[in-house]
Every structure is written in C-alpha cells, then in structure tokens.
Length: 133
Length: 182
Image (cartoon, each protein chain N blue to C red):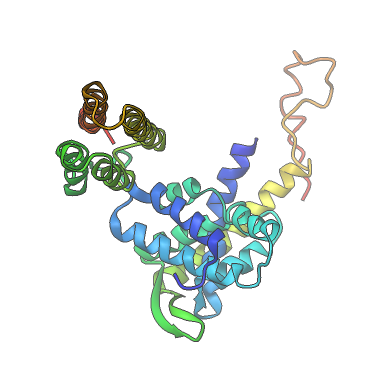
C-alpha cells in the first residue's frame, strides 16, 4: 500500500510544482518549502531538486540565474508556454479525476451485490447500478 | 558551497558519492541545488538533533540520485573500459605501491572511491588491506629495533614484511581490474 501511495504522490507532485510556478518566478528552495509545508505531500524534500531539473529538460519550465545577497547565484524557475498548457490541462483532468475517486472512496458507487447471502444470484446483475450524484 | 556546516558537508559528500554514476552535468547540478538548500536550512541550526531533522527531511542521497536518473535509459551507457581516473588509481595501487608503499596505494584507493567502479564495501575492504599493510610495516620496524638494528634476521623479516605491503597494491588493483561492471 505504501508503494501505491508513493506512485500516487510521484504522479501528482510534478503538477504541484508546475502549479506553484503559475504566479511567476520562484527560487527552487522556495518551491520546496511551499510543497513541504503541505502535510503528506512530500516524503523527501531533496527529490524535488532533480524533479525540477527534469521539468526543465522536458521544456515545461525554464531557469535563469539571479544574483543572491547571501551566497552564490541562484537558479530561478519559471513556467514555459508548454508548462502553462500542461498545468491547465492537468487542472481540468484533475477535477474530473478527483470527483470520480471521491465518489468511489466515499462509497457512492458500488460493484458488490447488496445481498451478500446469495452471491450466485445472477438476476440482480443490474440492481447495483444505482449511482447517486 | 559556502557556509554549510559539517553536517551539510558530510551529507554532500555522501550525495556526491551516490551520484558518481550520473552524467557529470546532472551530478553537478544536483550537488549545487542541494548545497544551496543546506546552506539556507542549516544557517540557523545549532544542535545535532535539529541538523538531523533537516537531513531526514531532505531524504536518503540514494533517493535523490534515483530521482535524478528517472529519465535516463534503464541501462546507462557505461564506458567500455576503465576511465582515466581508474587507470591512474590502478597504477598507483600497483606500480605506485613499489615506489611509495602505502602512500601511493592509499591515494589510489581515494581516487577509486570517487569512481563508480567500486562499491563502498569494496572501498572499505581496500582500506582494511592497507591497514594490515601499515600494521605489517610497524611490526617489521619493531622487530628490527628489538634486534638492535643490525641483525640479519630482523632485516630479513623487515624486507619480507615490506614485500607483503608491495603485494597489497597489485592485489587490490587486480581485483578492481577484473570486476566485470561498476
């Protein structure tokens, strides 16, 4: 189950990173801080740095160097047009997906027969297709 | 890396070693970014517990390296033969061991440690072998001193022990060279 949760996190996290950049440019550390401040989202803060690098290689973000008052120059991240489109597409797909998962998890949709005593009853095939909205 | 404290230095050293198999530019970028993170995070840290919490949140270096390698081909292209650094390390451990016993092999092991050829267990084994070499030289010198320095038997013992030391380098070099993969 932990592995399944990990996969779920991994899939979602890169869109969280992209969504965080919608407002403009951000220093990688501030992206990491923002994500880490949300409970249960990030298990290893360090993995976000290679993730950001990968998003750059994939052309979803680009970076520029800016001088820092407290150390070496820093890499600032910004969405590319492609990244912007990816976030918008994800945002829509996510709403649908989340609503769907919620309805299953909340038990509003069922696949099991309501009468557990007669599992061989084939006449009740359609009786469980009651969907509430 | 500017003011990362000793906790940060240790973590970065581990990360650098774990990232030895990454393409050089990826390795450098990962190190730079994590060093920046640690500089900021550790700036206000004053005790071991706080530092450990920072490093725990950062995660296992291996996890960071795995994430950095996620979009690399599953079997990363390995150099067909040993790299230049590995050749230098092997020479130091082999021929270097005859010219400069212990010191040259030690430098060789340190170079080897920074390449992906050896696992950390193998590096430890190499250090252990060198440690035995140091002990052997010490024992030889002690024997010579006890035998008043001029005794033929003691000199013979010393030469014999030095011979053991000289064998150590080539032995470990051979081991490294015959390993089929990094």
